[in-house]
Image 1 (cartoon, rainbow, N blue to C red):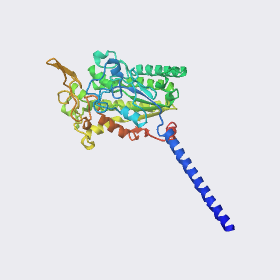
Image 2 (cartoon, rainbow, N blue to C red):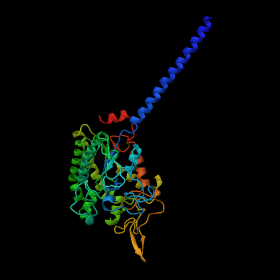
Image 3 (cartoon, one colour):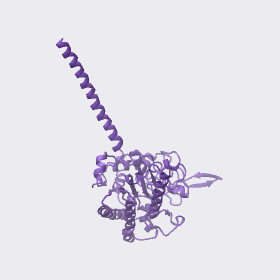
Image 4 (tube, helix red, strand yellow):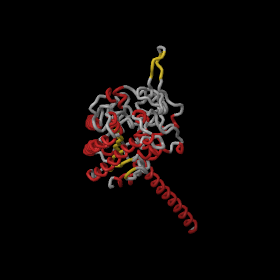
Length: 401
């Protein structure tokens, strides 16, 4: 009798232990899933400022769509981007589990619930004293983008508080302080000087003023509540067909990869000064995390080691028409002409953009943009070295940097 009771007691005890074990395991799994949901993607929104390197439709909305064959690789139609497909900012958003950013200026089909893109192709940090038709530069310079952002934030909060039917298309108020603020601008400020026939030394001379205006914008966005900044430096200007074709160099000024050394030196000088500005801003804006991303090194590495990474024709444009670099400034990618009463495209895409680096003489292909993003996403080219994909504890710690 006692043995039977003991056996029954033992069996019940085993059942209790099994049940408790499952409760513990389930709790751990549930917590892990909850942590993953809360921490895998630390930024609920992205607000981007920049030029054509990150424009997802701003200039197209204001001045007409980027023509085909732009967009052929991924979107299969023009999509506001000066590339055959996606840009670095697209891969960044995708990596963070967010939708591709809608351009602030695009009123058709846009959804701003997870951020907005204020960049436009041709934008500069310092306002240009010319029109777009005269110089090609966008009137939406960085100071204008700041105004647009500030107004967007104010009106978004107001509309959400009113309970307007459009509120689901706008960010929640708390997203503005938790968002990632990305900046990729400055390249056009350098080319602007050369367009005015300035020497390299003259271009270098005005860079401190340009970066002074840039730092003022960062301070203003910080005052609006921004705390996480992701700032790209500028790429190797001397490797772009646009510069190589327009401002010919002698053989001694061209490096072994086909890039113009003087233009690259200007870009490096800009980046050196930009990094100094970032260091100073970190001291001033104590609650901010400001990450400086060295895309120059990544882009130059890709161009200089094209074959090693599965690419070809480092400084030759994929989409263009004629010339040494398949680039003609008057007949850019997508240019057309009338032949026997019919409009035909004369500046066409190459057969396989996936093995080319430069898309149209100024911008990069989707394949190159993807490769570049893959190099920078884990923080290997960032200062401080911070991955864009991290758990919540890492995210909290970087704010204490």
